[in-house]
Amino acid sequence: MSVSGELRKEASEVEDNSLVRPRLVQEPARERCAVSGLNPMDPLMPGGNTPRPAFEIFRPVPNVAPPRAPKGPKRTSKTATTSGTEGKPADAGNPASDPLANIQAEDEQANAASAAGAATLKIPMQAQITLTQEMQSGQRDIQTVALEILQANFRWPGYLKIEPPGAEQAQLFPVGSEKAAVPLQHRGIHFGTLVLEGAAKSARITDQLQQSAAWLTAMLVLNHNFKNLRRLADTDELSGAYNRRYFMENVPHLLDRARRERFCVTILLFDIDDFKQYNDQFGHAAGDAIIREVIRLLRHCTRNRDMVARVGGDEFAVVFWDDGGPRQPDSQHPRTVLNIAQRFRKAVAEHPWNAEGGPISGKLSISGGLATFPWDAQNLTDLLAVADQELMRAKSLGKNAIVLAGPNGSSDIEDSKTTPFGGN
Image (cartoon, rainbow, N blue to C red; front, side, top):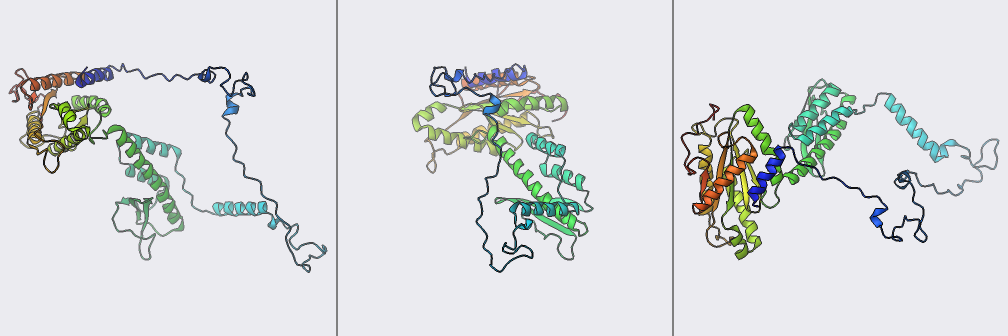
């Protein structure tokens, strides 16, 4: 089955909600070592012990402090005595000399300081859960959400904001100023500066602002890690484009949105002509270089919002959509998309692939097919089928061609494809 055929099958399964998650089969511990005498927990094994219950096997080891080494006798002066206890050291029987008593005294002092009004950062658990969920979804700016949480819980009289990295950093409540600033940085990563403007000087606010900066830095580090994990999960490592999983999961949602908001979506499905021949002749390293360069040329012809995905070895999909209006004042979808695809095809055909030690000698070309929602299909499965059909038609025309779906299968836009939504 071809890559495009697998794409259509996978899209159909996603849209039908017929994907079944693989079951996690947990084998009993005894079956993992079925040969008698090889399981160390087998009571039949010579020297083996009777298996303990699971709650005993996985019981966490308590965190017990190691015993203190006994201290030697304290040297004292012969003349150092206490009244009524002649011959004994001066500190004998004094609770202050006991290490445990010292620790208890320190704890009492800390509790007394806290009771006296020392500022302590207390963020509600539900607010932190909400912030973590926003990190996972990636739909809202985390800095904005975090500032809303801090302002709602502390109700500072001033204005709280985050200045981007590189801005002038103010000191914490400098003399003659009502502006406090604390840097947000962690292990060489500078996220900006937490700034509170218009607040009166106060030891309580100063302490809370410092603690808030520490909490906010931790949240920004966590969000940074979430972004890295999301990028690794959604991106093809070789080309830097989105991978097949991201394409199959997100395009159906985009089509649903296009149906609600009444805008057009066009999918370009293309591959590199005779890619296997180049791989066999020049090696797989040259093939990898070709893929990276094709994606680089493609990004020069598309917008940042257009979805570029690698869905197979040398097969790619590009999703063009214009929910915010036409790309240019006189543009019309999908006429403009066809022009973009043709410009990309010419850029690949005219690119000097053997210049400056390029990966191959000679020329390279691509062939592709275009299918547009809502004219050609209403869902991803059918759109991929139409685009794949036009891709095969481009191959039959001699390759190095981009074909837009239509009754004639030509590379020219049909006059009948007027915008059904009365917009772009």
